[in-house]
Amino acid sequence: MSERHPTDPTAGDFNGLRQLVDTLPSHWYFDPAHYERERATIWWKHWVYLCRADALAETRSFRTFDLVGQPILLLRDEAGEIRAFYNACRHRGAALCREPEGRLPASGISCPYHAWNYRLDGQLARIPNAGRPHHVPIADTALHPIAVKVWRGFVYANLAGAEATLGDNFNANLEQFDRWPLERLVVGYRLTKRIRCNWKVFWENYNECLHCPGVHPGLIDVVPIYRRGIMEERDDPNWRASADRDDPLYQGGLKRGATTWSVDGQSLGHEFADLTASERALGYHYMTSLPSHYLVLHVDHVRSSRILAIGPEETELEIEWLFPPETLADPAVDIMKACAFSARVMQEDGEVCELAQRGLHAAPHTHGMLMPEEYDVWRFQEWVRTSLGSE
Image (cartoon, rainbow, N blue to C red; front, side, top):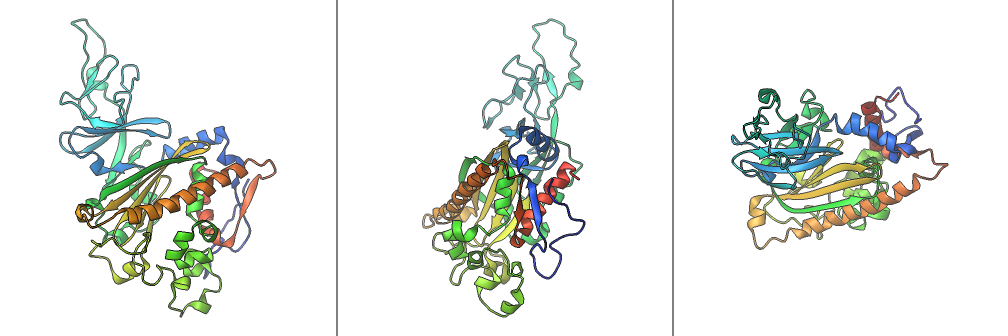
């Protein structure tokens, strides 16, 4: 079992760990029984990101999802409200919608197996019986509902119900993103891929930059501090020695002359008008919602990444690049300058995550150990332990 600490080993005037900390046990990354435990206590109890609200553009639009083994039907009803149900008929459990997306008929949701019909609020409307009697209490046979919430155009579902506050999932004060017009942004490009690693391996890679110098040549060029294998100024225990240096290598932010994450470091134009000077100067801002979602916000676009566990050793990523409508309407703008840059970073991350997964099977490697710079990996692993109720 990983070593536990009664106090935060990151407490102090720099961000790093101050003592040796063991990682999670290696078998937690590939053991099927442990994966089932995580499905039940993490994925089916926390808010999980599904899609953008504008993916259901019209009334009666629907999308289906596999939420880590649970079939989900998401739709927009006649009043424009987004609802979610288990994609299972109350008769004998047949999937109601077979396609990944589409538009329901005006008659509502009809089961393709025995034609039970439901209204868009989930209530059973009709059972075809050709005049023969039945004993089904129609008023008490609605579809099983799923709690759903929309935050600034992003749709989240919670299989355990709506008691948990959506804001509890986020790692930051959401007001700090108010100056980004997230609701009006439009998906300009989408990339879906599967990587052969446990979902936690991906999140751990996301939470450290020790790997950046050897893995991300393009990224460390645009973000010089990443070249040092750290993410922020105070990740260096000797940060005070460089506190007065006006250099992104030590202070963070984009390299001089760069304005965003793109192949040439230059913005695509149509920048977000309300950002502060300090927000523009930093050039990248992160928002995380465990276990399934993070955003990277720039001056001209936002990247949304959805993470879903597919099995003990497989993870699906869906990356969407969001832009103002005027950017996508401008024939002079090539959005692939931004998309190709971060797609390459994601490809590099996927490759090293798969390497990490393979090595975890080594019999003597019962657990790893964390370097001081991996304080956010420690925090993520503590979140996993807490979510599982581990002692």
